[in-house]
Length: 146
Image (cartoon, rainbow, N blue to C red; front, side, top):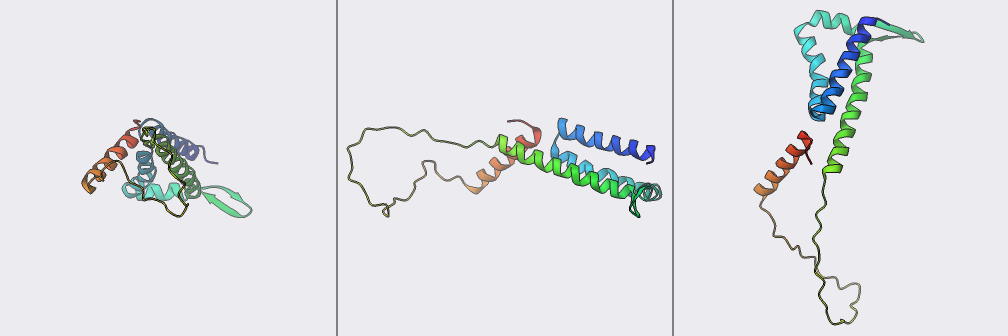
């Protein structure tokens, strides 16, 4: 294997993981794709030579840097998606309303088919407020706050 390629990939992975840990998983996903894309647009000849550089041959199939980059992408995108799902799950708070216990007289048993419709105790919010709440929650999640 080419030592220069290994060093480049190590630096690339380190940058992505540092952004993932200290800034945001979404930003790390953007940087994950933008770094090779920008470098291939700015320096197309150098990028083409780097990506087509053969690393090794396995059972007659040559493995090039582009194959290594694609495997790194798949692994890091899986890590980013997993951290997003876990962070959403941990920040998701289920709202429970405490019910007041009032002594009532015993009512006769009602048949199971006679179910009363559920009434929500909170009035419905307008769509504008729901969208605003959603954007605020997304902002908190992306900034890493609880």
